[in-house]
Length: 274
Image (cartoon, rainbow, N blue to C red; front, top):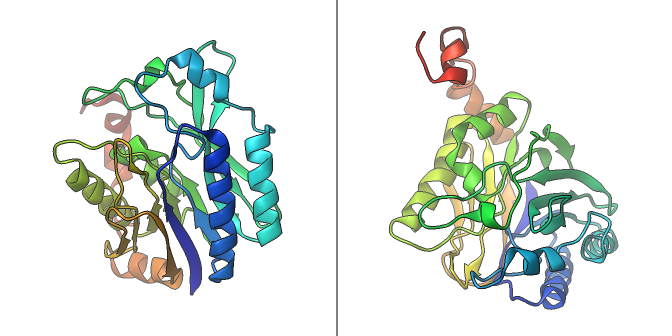
């Protein structure tokens, strides 16, 4: 068994306060025996709708900025792997990347993923403030298993999770800020479970609570069973993962092996049958 911590927080607009909360939870998670802690999207700060793109860009940082540096130091001090998120500066004025970081127990950056799919849907337009990433990030080995990284709205695009699992991911992580609205809790729970079940992998999905977000941070096992759903409570929960379940489920329910990629071919790329 591998023990992880799932953090469900309400980020304020104050970057310093959010950093201090993250550092506190990193320490607490280590004291509970966790080897990894997962934070949601928008850990750095809540960006209200009234905040301009230029104002958000002002609080963004580079990968070697003080926010990330402090998280790396905290992870190293606690000897715990950390999934965190930042607003990362870009070269485009008034636009930032929505970036997920995997910090290993030595405090090193193992992976950096910039959100590919911006939430331009259901009345939102993230592209007004954000710049979409342009690269897939190869799954990588961590202390808890082989990790594939996504962020929030990416969950609605099964192609990404499938590519990550085909290239080795045993665990998909998706830090999120899932916005409230009609059927949004149901959408969230369905997407997280579906991505786990169809790929025979764990999904770790920490979500924001409060402000405009639904909470319900989840861990789902490779057979689609909900290990935990945090509902609307703040704080963190400890979860034990049994990585051997990935191989067992993929053997008994061989969805990856049974795919007919020889038939899908060009239609997958073009959306046309011929």
